[in-house]
Length: 409
Image (cartoon, rainbow, N blue to C red):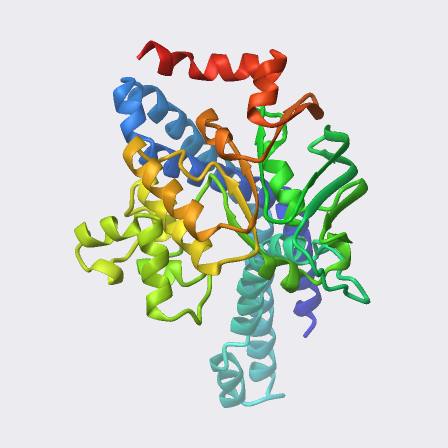
């Protein structure tokens, strides 16, 4: 019992010494893991550029940093571990000497001393040390989990309002993200059943506009409205039920193609699932894959090509059949033949929906009722495709530049 406070003191000292090195070790481990994944996933690009040696050097450097961080952790832990072991062994030695002295003096019997020593009283103290190390490791992981779990969610309305219509509007929206102003007093509207195309240079905030419409973020000032109702006053489940989304970066869950498509509407009957797949030209992919609908797509859709993953995402959005559709250039990974076929399916199945599409391929814009040209945190021009071309402004320049390669072909 007298040795227990000494052991606790060594444990506390060791924990303080390891506080900094544990955090550094975690960062180095994470960086090395990222480098390993990068090196494995980017083999085609690295080999094409004959840069595998250079990139392997970066991976090797990262692993060396892990090695150095591990050594620093061991050095920080060593004094406490040695001190703890010495304290436990010193306690055992004192107990042995005291027991022998008492036994020789006749105060206790030899059998009692042997029984006490056989109980291995030092083991609980050493177990306490081992437990302390495991708790330190768990504490670091729990702190990182706690940081995620303690992130404040977007507030839910106390008295939710149900939107009656499906028109969309930005009203003097200002939004800042990552230390910069993405939108500054931006206003526009999309009448129900019409289609808005959003174009502009990279970094103009096109994809962010879609995310604000879906309330993935809240605006700093102004309001984003659906059916005249501020999206902050609409229950999240109700809002999401109104919106079908296809973003440019497609993520598929590890499972079958059918399971990933049914995420759009789990209770859909087989005919609706097949119709959505046909409209997205996913049926062509299913026919050539071993297993068909039961084919596994892998983690993140790794077993499918980029175009195939996009078709699954399109079929998922078509199956959901929301009255508001947000598209982040759904045909960016498709060849021209399938691009035209997918657009025909979208035109047929999404007739009468309110659609906002971010256009990277300018030929998509011609199908829109209204066009916004974003640049520098605001709307530079807006109008129909033909109107904007007649103005010979920023949109016309952007159009001519994007279509120049097509014309040269």
